[in-house]
Length: 83
Image (cartoon, rainbow, N blue to C red; front, side):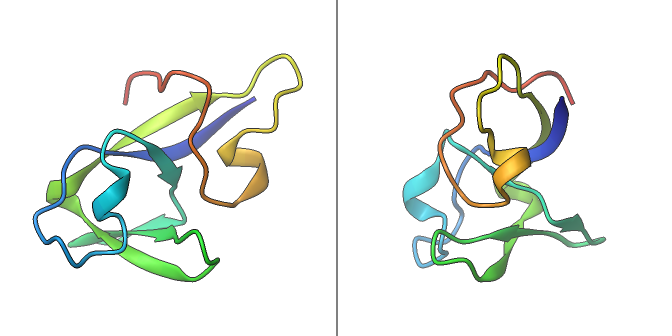
C-alpha cells in the first residue's frame, strides 16, 4: 500500500514543531498553496512550510504499520519513493 507523506528536508525556523525531525518522514494531511498540513507527535494538526519539506510516497509492505496507515507521526522504516 502506498501513502502520501512529507520528508522534512530542513527547518527555516528553529521554533517550528518539526525542528528536530529533519530527515524524517511525517504524515501529509493536506496541501495548501503556501504550506503543508501535517500531524505533530502530540496529535495536533499543524503546518509545515513548503521550503522545509518535499512530498513523498511511502510504500507500506510486508504488513508493516507505516505512517500512512497510522496517521501518527513516526520515523518510517521504509524509504520514501519519488515524488
